Length: 95
Image (cartoon, rainbow, N blue to C red; front, top):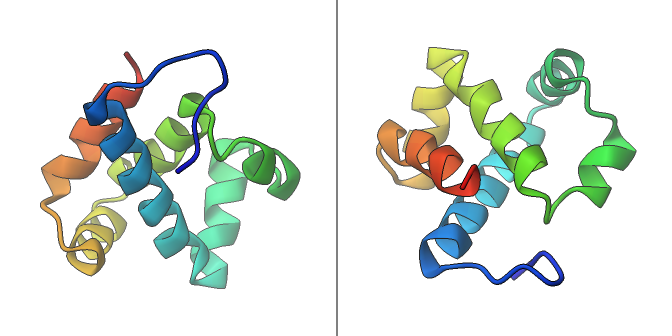
């Protein structure tokens, strides 16, 4: 599990980070969706790789999904969670 050096994480934050990383994997599995993520968030592939343990990057991924309901619903379905769980993960990572 990825952690942020020097910053202890609560179990809720760890779960949120895992869910966000899984959501990122889902986004990146489809080239058009991955391109849209980079375009709309301003992230670069390098920043994305470097920021896998950065809550701000993970929140950007979750907000990307939240801003496009069809993707949010499809990601939640693929990950076996309720769509609200993705939004909750973003809130937990923002703490």
